[in-house]
Length: 171
Image 1 (cartoon, rainbow, N blue to C red):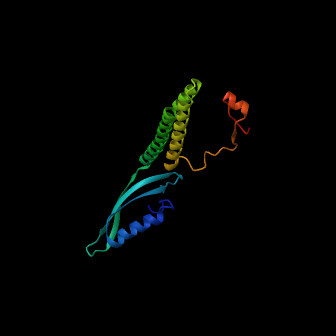
Image 2: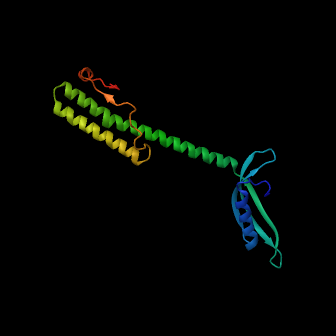
Image 3: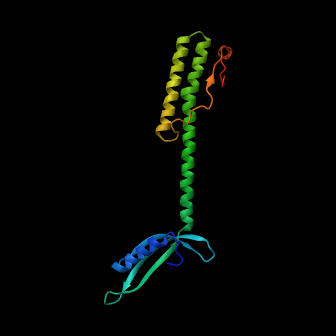
Protein backbone atom coordinates (compact mmCIF):
# COMPACT_ATOMS: atom_id res chain seq x y z
CA UNK A 1 0.00 0.00 0.00
CA UNK A 2 2.65 2.55 1.01
CA UNK A 3 4.50 1.98 -2.26
CA UNK A 4 1.46 3.32 -4.11
CA UNK A 5 1.04 6.43 -1.89
CA UNK A 6 2.01 9.61 -3.75
CA UNK A 7 5.55 10.69 -2.85
CA UNK A 8 4.30 14.07 -1.56
CA UNK A 9 1.84 12.33 0.81
CA UNK A 10 3.99 9.36 1.84
CA UNK A 11 5.91 10.94 4.76
CA UNK A 12 2.68 12.09 6.42
CA UNK A 13 0.93 8.76 5.87
CA UNK A 14 3.95 6.78 7.13
CA UNK A 15 4.05 9.00 10.22
CA UNK A 16 0.33 8.49 10.92
CA UNK A 17 0.49 4.73 10.45
CA UNK A 18 3.74 4.58 12.44
CA UNK A 19 2.11 6.41 15.37
CA UNK A 20 -0.89 4.07 15.15
CA UNK A 21 1.41 1.03 15.33
CA UNK A 22 3.53 2.52 18.12
CA UNK A 23 0.54 3.34 20.33
CA UNK A 24 -1.78 0.57 19.07
CA UNK A 25 -4.49 3.04 18.13
CA UNK A 26 -6.75 3.50 15.08
CA UNK A 27 -5.88 5.91 12.30
CA UNK A 28 -7.66 7.75 9.51
CA UNK A 29 -6.15 9.78 6.70
CA UNK A 30 -6.62 11.08 3.19
CA UNK A 31 -3.96 10.47 0.61
CA UNK A 32 -3.27 10.22 -3.07
CA UNK A 33 -2.08 7.02 -4.67
CA UNK A 34 -0.40 6.48 -8.00
CA UNK A 35 -1.75 3.53 -9.94
CA UNK A 36 0.49 1.35 -12.12
CA UNK A 37 -0.84 3.17 -15.21
CA UNK A 38 0.32 6.50 -13.67
CA UNK A 39 -3.15 7.82 -12.87
CA UNK A 40 -3.59 9.49 -9.49
CA UNK A 41 -6.56 8.67 -7.26
CA UNK A 42 -7.57 10.13 -3.91
CA UNK A 43 -8.36 7.85 -1.01
CA UNK A 44 -9.80 8.03 2.46
CA UNK A 45 -8.11 5.38 4.54
CA UNK A 46 -8.99 4.12 8.00
CA UNK A 47 -7.34 1.33 9.91
CA UNK A 48 -6.49 -0.15 13.22
CA UNK A 49 -3.74 -2.14 14.81
CA UNK A 50 -4.39 -5.73 15.85
CA UNK A 51 -2.26 -6.96 18.74
CA UNK A 52 -1.58 -10.44 20.03
CA UNK A 53 -2.20 -11.70 23.57
CA UNK A 54 1.01 -10.06 24.76
CA UNK A 55 0.16 -6.66 23.29
CA UNK A 56 2.58 -6.91 20.37
CA UNK A 57 1.47 -5.71 16.97
CA UNK A 58 0.22 -8.69 14.98
CA UNK A 59 -0.99 -6.79 11.93
CA UNK A 60 -2.56 -3.61 10.68
CA UNK A 61 -5.97 -3.84 9.03
CA UNK A 62 -7.80 -1.14 7.21
CA UNK A 63 -9.94 -0.05 4.36
CA UNK A 64 -9.41 2.49 1.59
CA UNK A 65 -12.24 4.27 -0.16
CA UNK A 66 -11.63 5.90 -3.53
CA UNK A 67 -13.02 9.43 -3.12
CA UNK A 68 -11.52 10.87 -6.29
CA UNK A 69 -14.84 11.66 -7.95
CA UNK A 70 -16.24 13.25 -4.79
CA UNK A 71 -13.10 15.41 -4.37
CA UNK A 72 -13.28 16.49 -8.02
CA UNK A 73 -16.96 17.38 -7.57
CA UNK A 74 -16.14 19.35 -4.39
CA UNK A 75 -13.40 21.26 -6.22
CA UNK A 76 -15.73 21.98 -9.16
CA UNK A 77 -18.41 23.18 -6.75
CA UNK A 78 -15.93 25.46 -4.96
CA UNK A 79 -14.75 26.86 -8.30
CA UNK A 80 -18.33 27.42 -9.46
CA UNK A 81 -19.13 29.11 -6.16
CA UNK A 82 -16.22 31.52 -6.62
CA UNK A 83 -17.33 32.23 -10.18
CA UNK A 84 -20.93 32.79 -9.06
CA UNK A 85 -19.72 35.17 -6.35
CA UNK A 86 -17.68 37.06 -8.96
CA UNK A 87 -20.72 37.37 -11.24
CA UNK A 88 -22.93 38.48 -8.35
CA UNK A 89 -20.36 41.13 -7.40
CA UNK A 90 -20.29 42.37 -11.00
CA UNK A 91 -24.09 42.53 -11.05
CA UNK A 92 -24.22 44.46 -7.78
CA UNK A 93 -21.54 46.85 -9.05
CA UNK A 94 -23.47 47.45 -12.27
CA UNK A 95 -26.64 48.19 -10.29
CA UNK A 96 -24.75 50.54 -7.98
CA UNK A 97 -23.11 52.34 -10.88
CA UNK A 98 -26.47 52.73 -12.60
CA UNK A 99 -28.34 53.81 -9.48
CA UNK A 100 -25.70 56.04 -7.95
CA UNK A 101 -23.59 57.30 -10.84
CA UNK A 102 -25.45 57.23 -14.13
CA UNK A 103 -28.74 58.48 -12.77
CA UNK A 104 -26.99 61.35 -10.95
CA UNK A 105 -25.18 62.27 -14.14
CA UNK A 106 -28.51 62.34 -15.99
CA UNK A 107 -29.91 64.66 -13.30
CA UNK A 108 -26.82 66.86 -13.67
CA UNK A 109 -27.15 66.96 -17.46
CA UNK A 110 -30.84 67.87 -17.45
CA UNK A 111 -30.39 70.35 -14.61
CA UNK A 112 -27.56 72.03 -16.48
CA UNK A 113 -29.57 72.08 -19.73
CA UNK A 114 -32.50 73.60 -17.84
CA UNK A 115 -30.31 76.32 -16.36
CA UNK A 116 -30.36 74.97 -12.78
CA UNK A 117 -26.58 74.97 -12.30
CA UNK A 118 -26.85 74.67 -8.51
CA UNK A 119 -28.80 71.40 -8.85
CA UNK A 120 -26.38 70.23 -11.57
CA UNK A 121 -23.42 70.89 -9.26
CA UNK A 122 -25.11 69.05 -6.37
CA UNK A 123 -25.77 66.09 -8.66
CA UNK A 124 -22.14 66.08 -9.80
CA UNK A 125 -20.89 66.28 -6.20
CA UNK A 126 -23.20 63.40 -5.31
CA UNK A 127 -21.88 61.44 -8.30
CA UNK A 128 -18.26 62.00 -7.27
CA UNK A 129 -19.01 61.02 -3.67
CA UNK A 130 -20.75 57.83 -4.80
CA UNK A 131 -17.94 56.97 -7.21
CA UNK A 132 -15.38 57.42 -4.42
CA UNK A 133 -17.51 55.27 -2.09
CA UNK A 134 -17.78 52.48 -4.67
CA UNK A 135 -14.02 52.53 -5.35
CA UNK A 136 -13.24 52.58 -1.62
CA UNK A 137 -15.57 49.60 -1.08
CA UNK A 138 -13.87 47.68 -3.90
CA UNK A 139 -10.48 48.43 -2.36
CA UNK A 140 -11.67 47.50 1.13
CA UNK A 141 -12.94 44.12 -0.06
CA UNK A 142 -9.78 43.43 -2.05
CA UNK A 143 -11.46 43.50 -5.46
CA UNK A 144 -9.45 46.54 -6.53
CA UNK A 145 -5.87 47.37 -5.60
CA UNK A 146 -4.93 50.95 -4.69
CA UNK A 147 -3.58 52.68 -7.78
CA UNK A 148 -5.16 50.15 -10.14
CA UNK A 149 -7.40 52.82 -11.64
CA UNK A 150 -4.59 55.19 -12.63
CA UNK A 151 -4.85 56.32 -16.23
CA UNK A 152 -1.86 55.93 -18.51
CA UNK A 153 -2.66 59.29 -20.05
CA UNK A 154 -4.37 62.15 -18.26
CA UNK A 155 -7.66 63.42 -19.66
CA UNK A 156 -7.28 66.91 -21.07
CA UNK A 157 -10.13 69.29 -21.75
CA UNK A 158 -9.55 71.87 -24.41
CA UNK A 159 -11.77 74.94 -24.66
CA UNK A 160 -13.51 73.64 -27.76
CA UNK A 161 -13.99 70.21 -26.16
CA UNK A 162 -15.36 71.78 -23.00
CA UNK A 163 -17.91 73.75 -25.02
CA UNK A 164 -19.04 70.55 -26.74
CA UNK A 165 -18.81 68.59 -23.47
CA UNK A 166 -16.22 66.17 -24.88
CA UNK A 167 -13.20 64.83 -23.06
CA UNK A 168 -10.29 63.23 -24.80
CA UNK A 169 -7.15 61.48 -23.54
CA UNK A 170 -3.82 63.20 -23.92
CA UNK A 171 -5.07 66.65 -25.00
